Length: 571
Image (cartoon, rainbow, N blue to C red):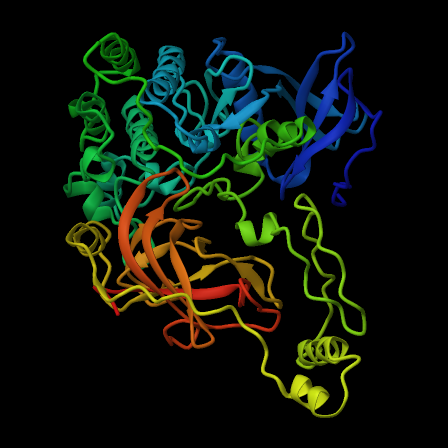
């Protein structure tokens, strides 16, 4: 049988009585469409080639069957399934409720999420799990990416039962563990794996306690912005820590976490199912009782934001990013990509101001062109077209031409002086005096985060390479990848400390043609802040950065890629 044509279907194609309107997304095993039914209702429809193998096809039918058992506002509805075309079918289709909203991780990134809001979302997921468990269904992949927050009601919806389990269905997994996401795997699962290593046919059977433990990981991340346990030095899971260590209490990571909420989180992360709640119903009741308490500051923000919020996407983009982006969400990440991951990503923080919001000043004049008038404040920065191959002479030629234009009209000694004048750079501001790293920041770096003095990490002012970027006195940098404490600058070895896109901020200043930086705060994408002492170094580990062509009075142009180094004293 020849492989089926997996190119996107054109709008107007009819599948199971619905009409295809647009592609919401596609992955390695399926394409997801927005479809409209005969009565005008919108839905999401997965289309899966039938020749992807019997196991994957069986999982698709199982997902449909499990979903049809569950009806609840906090659970995504399965609406039907079938094969297409009707004659000589080549695809399996699965019709799902189209949920407009964002993932729980994206929702948690919004400025000023309160303690009460976070507890409410977890309470709603507990309610969904109670309904699923009562029906004999174990989700087996509870995580933020599989929880949507409806835009219309702000309620959490548990989605994607693609790897769910019910005793009425045969086991499909051939290995030790069912499909899932490693950081959310319960201690009892790891203990089973150790006890049965090398035993032929050994297979771990997940139960309700596994779903509750995973929800505890979700709650811990919402409260602190990090996982309960850091990855092992080799980059995998630190199984020893999961089995035998108690997670760092959330209030030590984020002092705004109430102790009563922390107690629920730590109980969910207990080492055995018996130490957790007896079931999802008991968890739901405990959360309801907790929510009724008046001695908890429910309206206090967990992660106060000082940066402006990320701009809202256009509605069409929201459908793609919230529902259709849901290839890893409501639309089933298990067949669109690997379900194994270490730290699920989230939306990046807002773009660096030097790239996304240009200053109200004129850009450097183009080669062989007179100076131009300043642009308006709202003028967007245009990305320069990429060219193939290195062009080392481009900047010097442009700089020379601009210099000649600036010297037009001069003669004799004045012209010679103008052409021979050095490039003008920003006037040097008074350098701050030497300063020891505050004790709180030093303790946070070395004990909480596990940094070594002198270790470095790459960071970005812009993800556009090949050209310099303008920075300001307070422009932050974003970490380029997870920072593993005790590792080298490329992240090899060490233990996870700060996630990718952590925002590092402080003060920049100019001295003798170089830009220097003292960074004193690190803010994770979820808004958790840490006091730090990091200095700016270039890629050769020299303190400071060389100013780039285009710099001028009050204007610092630098390379987009830098390094920050852990120090105990700013010199």
